[in-house]
Amino acid sequence: MEKEEFMAQFGEGYGYPNAPKNIDEIRATEFKRLQGLVYLDHAGATLYSESQIEAVGKDLTSNVFGNPHSLSDCSITTSDFITAARQQVLDFFNASPKDYTCIFTSGATAALKLVGEGFPWSRESCYMYTMENHNSVLGIREYALEKGATALAVDIEEVEYPSIQSKAHEPRFQFCKHSLQRRAEAKSSSSDLNGCTYNLFAFPSECNFSGRRFHLDLVNIIKDDPVKSFGGLLHGQGSWMVLIDAAKGCATEPLDLARYPADFVVFSFYKIFGYPTGLGALIVRNEAAKFLRKTYFSGGTVSASIADIDYIKRRDSIEQLLEDGTVSFLSIASIRHGFNIINTLTSLCY
Ligand SMILES: *Cc1c(COP(=O)(O)O)cnc(C)c1O
Image (cartoon, helix red, strand yellow):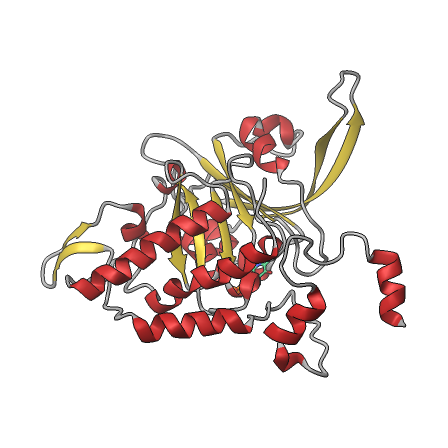
């Protein structure tokens, strides 16, 4: 009865019209463990399906996965899986490998920390973020404030001006200052060697608390003309980079990076297809990756280091520079089965 009422109201567009099975069939075959249960924490973690885990098990028992840093046939097997997985992630976000690199991390939070740690903050920099944001995004401000930068929380209102031209309703945004923070005792650190100031704007594609979805046009508007878009809120100069926390948003709607060329995008895989946990990624625009400073070095990030001399030789590629230690290669090898499930439910289109 309740279901009939629900279907009468929301039936149109309910389910996955292109999927081979309807939702009741999917639940009965792929989520048998849910019998008699109602799971309401999809925003916290998506549930993996049975066939996905079966396929992962088959992979693990039929392949020999060596450490990707070794030199052997089985390390090449692993490297091939990792390369294919990076490409699949970029495809999911419609990002060309010419412009973007997929860096595997232990989750969205670790990816955010990587950006915060490496960002070229100076006293002139500003870290601006929307009030609606995950704690893991707010945490970046500690790196900014420590370097003497300003942190600014803003509210964004979407205003639609009916335009006189035919362009109909272009979204415009109004930025309202909420609070500005600066740490008096911060160590002075001036602009980049070449005199440039870098600023960062961070927002979630969807807030996991309120459910609000932010318009991705923010990326283009801020990057094209920051001074105008902030409407006098800031007098700071320099260039602006944009970070999207897609951890919640991409669980239901992947971002199109060809259309909204953010500099950094972070997410965790378990929010998209439930398994594996402990794996996420930073999708970084190659141009922006050049500005990230890395202090720590580790196995994987250097080709040589000497214990008793201050000498290290860092590796060249963006992946090698930013991924510390051995990546979670068995988890990475399993994500293709998660993407397979997504692809059977819906054909991705942009
Ligand atoms: C879940 C979530 C995070 C944090 O992800 P972790 O997997 O805990 O690192 C960050 N932002 C948003 C919007 C989230 O939904």
